[in-house]
Amino acid sequence: MIFRHFGSKAKLFEEAVLAPFSTFVSEYIAEWAARPRGVKSPYMEARDFYRGVYDVLTENRRLIREMIGGRATGSLAADTMSTPQLGVLLERFEEFIERERDAGGFRDFDPAVMTRLMFGLVFSVAIYGDWMFEGATRPRPSVDAFIDEMARLTIYGAYPEGAVPPAAL
Image 1 (spheres, rainbow, N blue to C red):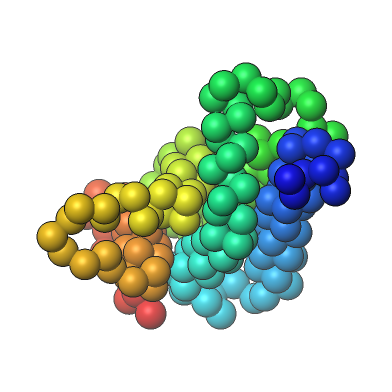
Image 2 (cartoon, rainbow, N blue to C red):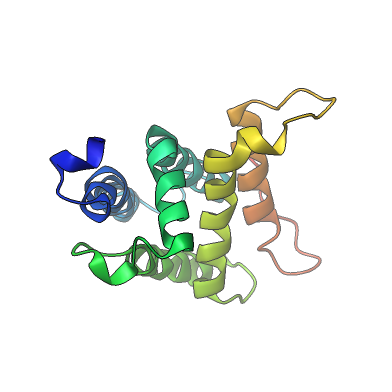
């Protein structure tokens, strides 16, 4: 089994999933902080976030599914991990979401909830997207179609009622 090289399934999950996701969050936030406001539209910011998270998750889809199974059966406990857990990593992004909300003219929303909703959208498509279309009569849309719709839903759903959001691109 592959986790023998890491000592445990928990350690493998840390190295293969949490570490790359942590790196992505750090790099995304650093790039955003270094860029002057308005260089990228809110839509493109959201799209870049979704694409990056999607790529990190799909690279380790099989392992993530195994880890979900381990947590569900109790064979993998959250307290067996030594690196930051998902909640800690999402809190880092939550601070970014809060700053964007305050500076970008978005409606008032709870950044803790919004961050997890955003992650949940991309997580479900990256990990279970294939399952969602099993037996469907329509073909599965492309990854880009999913990412575009997630970004549109996030940005246009975040403006105050009656406000006209800027152009998507």
